[in-house]
Amino acid sequence: MDSDLKTFRDFLMQYNLVTEACFGACVNDMTTRTVSEKEEKCSTNCLDKYLKMTQRLSLRFQEHQMMNAEAGGASVGK
Image 1: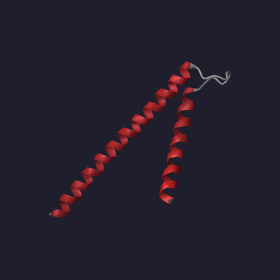
Image 2: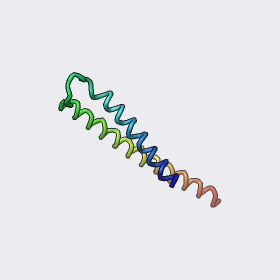
Image 3: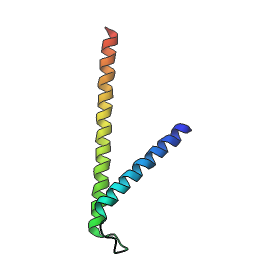
Image 4: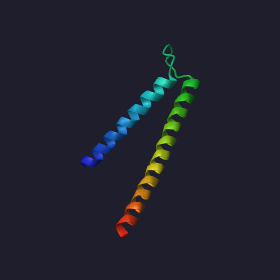
């Protein structure tokens, strides 16, 4: 249960960081109540880039872990 709560808390922290970063980078005009098409497109691109970066980073980390496990297994077998 504590693990699930920590995972959810970590997710919310990452969500808040991305939201703040994309909002700060994309929303510049606070004089209207509506979000402009340009701001919306910027926000979507920002989130897409973050998600792709996170996915790529996860894959690279997984590859690195597998290489370390293989190297560790080879040295233990000798």
